[in-house]
Image 1 (cartoon, rainbow, N blue to C red):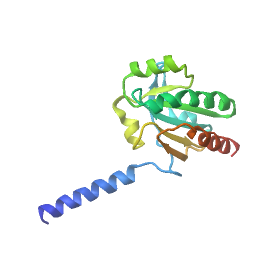
Image 2: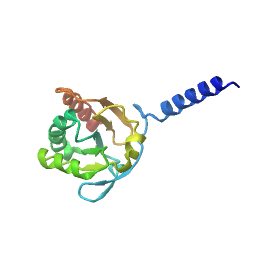
Image 3: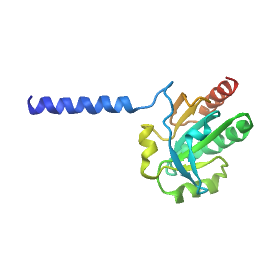
Image 4: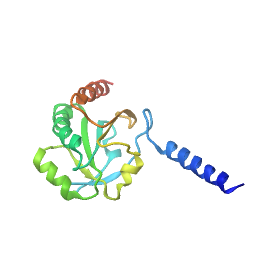
Length: 164
């Protein structure tokens, strides 16, 4: 095979490997364990039986900071119904994450993705990225980015999944 042929084969292989790796609706949510800002290791699998909203964010992301208080209200409103929000900071450094939490006063767990292994596992394409997982650990909703009003869709999805 020519050099060009091998190059094309390599590119196609990379494309299909990356496509196969991306998470999608109806996929089982990949399990992970991350340390929280409180210093406790939290594992996604331990939340099986609850509806989980995973929110991947960064301190440098304006829409992420704007969304956090809204996610906290959602967390507090539905926590007693078997729902939780888990914030996954993608920077790998707890200091900027802690500064944002101190400013926004969010109460849901914030996890630090040191080495961006979980970000890679979920094949993030945008900041913030929000993934809602049902009680069986299946991804039911994915939302990339944030603009005011997006949280109404989160409420709709969460309420539906809580009733299931």
